[in-house]
Image (cartoon, rainbow over the protein chains, first blue to last red):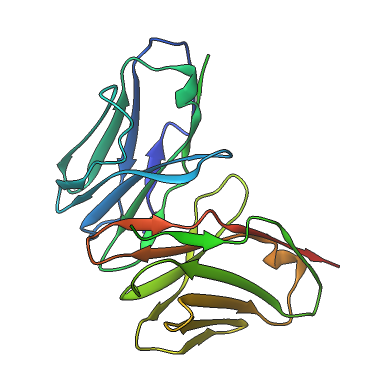
Amino acid sequence: DAGVIQSPRHEVTEMGQEVTLRCKPISGHNSLFWYRQTMMRGLELLIYFNNNVPIDDSGMPEDRFSAKMPNASFSTLKIQPSEPRDSAVYFCASGGEETQYFGPGTRLLVL
Amino acid sequence: SQKIEQNSEALNIQEGKTATLTCNYTNYSPAYLQWYRQDPGRGPVFLLLIRENEKEKRKERLKVTFDTTLKQSLFHITASQPADSATYLCYVEDSNYQLIWGAGTKLIIKP
């Protein structure tokens, strides 16, 4: 298996633009997680899905953030409009019963 | 609410010695606790899981203990090597399906 796949790996955009991050989980995993990591705040859980259904989105910062999982093999995290404080590394992870497998992350820079 | 505390200061260990990292939780004992390793620019990688009813778990040079009386897990790396240098994260899932990560401890193994 190729592991969790994220795209793009790097994204540089200007404030106010829409950003869409994509994730393909490991086949057979029924949970999917979106995280944000910064030096100041560490690893923060934004939202997680179980069997494509959002279970906990309490970590989503505000209405500018939205996440979807239309099927078991694809998820998106969208930021609209983006702001400089959204600059961070965004990780997607998938998991079976207990452990999580992380993707390589998307490094986002909002100017 | 449950919180995870890890030593925020970097831990410097001489090569060949045993490195010991600490993870403390504040409230009730989780059903299981996990340790992950994160290298710069990469996502966390699962290392070990220990359940509430287990005192100790081993994997090669790694050992994890779980003390529900002290509300603490210890993570040991024996015969440490410079390649073990990384940030190590502690993670629990509580009974309310809250996913809680520690801030991580940076381990530096000096040759």
